[in-house]
Length: 273
Image (cartoon, rainbow, N blue to C red; front, side, top):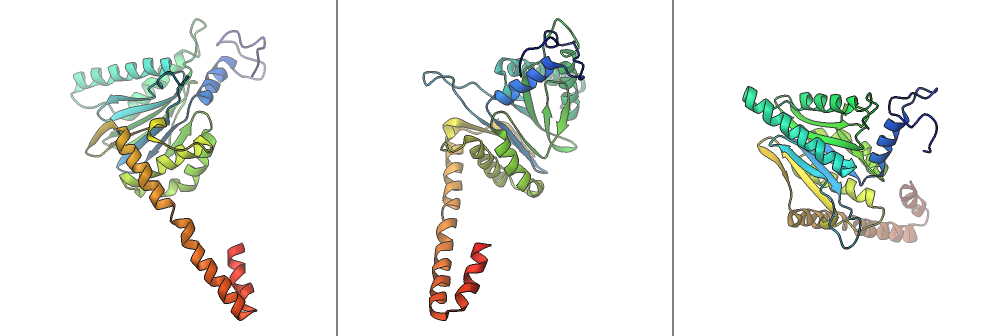
């Protein structure tokens, strides 16, 4: 990304058919700390990485409750995300007051996308520099949407945005077929593993990640740090014995190989594969 003669105005097209100001806003999303969403038939889980600008400061809030059945996680410019979450909250209140029923998730996402699109077509405005993962539950089931600064929106089974999110996407792509039938606990576990993938060697702790859940019979809420740490510890307990468990089998195969001669090659071949 660099300055050129076509990026001074959001309404100026380049000869290649690009709007550079919109692309810069999408780049701001990639620079933000990671946010991850997963959904099953009955639940949606949001997770995000908490990063402080300084050791002396607290981290910015990245998960917002919109209504009892809707919440969102953001990556990018936090101030823009805060303004959009307030807009979404207002829309939910107005709809509930008018129709005495909760606002469908899909309708709210379309309204949010329309609001973002207006900023790409007005020379005196700038695009919102934030990406939103919108989690919700309505009469049609659980939903997870991604709203882009360009005004586009997509529904996902699982998705990750922000810096180093590609590692989380790779994990989610391997596992997403199981998410539909996953329980609440399994979904949270997969979310924590996906968060760990974005840390690149840094130890996963409750102080650097936030988890929120919404589901059938469960209003949108953020899990407290103690609960998240207990889940992280439980995950580590499950994961650690897997490596030692393979050692006795390997030792047995090597022992049989030493005694049986030719059978050793047969025992080693599956291990190499």
